Image (cartoon, rainbow, N blue to C red; front, side):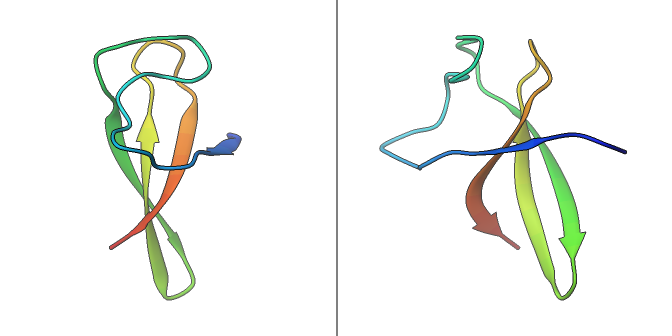
Length: 56
């Protein structure tokens, strides 16, 4: 799957899509990179993928 990952800085909350303005939160996805699993967020409206720096 080929997609761009947009880095975001976590403030008090991350609920509104910074690219399209969708206001009702995100879907989650996980991406394995070596020994690290990144927890990424997908906007349900524009389908862009965001990385807030979380890992599991």
